[in-house]
Length: 469
Ligand SMILES: *Cc1c(COP(=O)(O)O)cnc(C)c1O
View 1: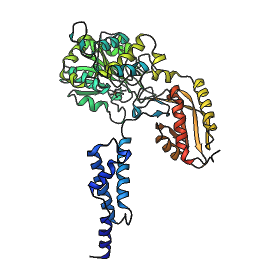
View 2: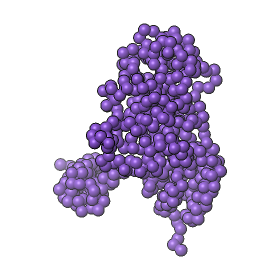
View 3: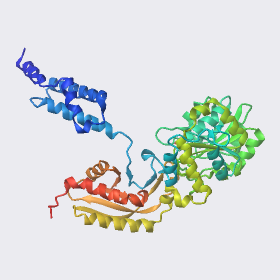
View 4: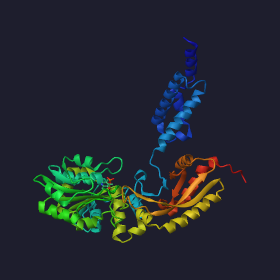
């Protein structure tokens, strides 16, 4: 054996056995919630990785027992960080898909808690037996959409999938080339639609599609005319697409269904977002939209329109596959009650945030920046003009004017500050522009300001040179 191999052998002797390490870890306070099986798993991972590093020569004569323990604890803590955690959204992106889209209203949150035990999701208290699932919420939706019937599934992609599966999988669906869009990183409308078995018949061009294009494409196998709202982008300039009325007229003459995938669910309208009740009154047979975009509720996909078609959808086995659970009915019902009571703009966080005036945000931002300066931690906080973002692929051309707090520190880069904020309790998600960390209070609720303030103080405390007074 060479001396090098001998040294490696010697160092390896310092590695603890799995049993020893597990015994040690079980007494560690940070591992309290891990349980024996997971502690053993992390002990093994830690020892295995150390062994490879010793053999590779990257770890030498250190205290391997200590190193193995620290490493196992770190691995566990990192795993725990991956649990869902509450964050403060200081990005100014109201419907932030990575952060859970719409924050729920107070009453929706209460409704979730109340229904989280046993509840009447499928029970009729009058009859004392099995009841209909979702009837109450479906009636609320039909009401706010001014239509006959509605049904709820997991999300809007599921809604579109279900409508095509039930009504068009044995035939053709006509769609404009300008509407074959990708919405968010993982959802391409045509991919979902093709998975139903329906044949997509593309008509028109990217920027212009005329009613005659649809008409010429209608044949014996046509089941549906589909319109998809291009949500996250706009083609501007030389464009054309027929009105819903004209398309409804054609669909009626050809005896096919007109279905519109609206996406955002702006029940009260916003910019040029389609309003479900308007599409339906203009003649769409069915519309589908998300529950957690502009509607401001939980993740869900809503289909509303003609009762005979909704009934058909309800009877299809795929509906059973895509249905939602009691917590979603609870939260969606409470959210919709705000609309039917005429209180949506006051009670639904997404709408409050979008409607919050620049003046109000300026006032909050100035006050908040003043508090940060008073911390005396070397943080500079200046207030400047900017724009918020609606997000969630909705209303891409609306940028509400806002007031931003730019945070900087003489000795810290913007990246360093942004990452420290992300590691605070609770984590704060900010954005960086022109080398400045920006905080937009539009997406921070009033009652979150103290949490945000404390998180900022926590993030900067390791860098603060303030001498104890
Ligand atoms: C967002 C969007 C979808 C997808 O909605 P999910 O609820 O996320 O499944 C589908 N269609 C359109 C037009 C959209 O804007």
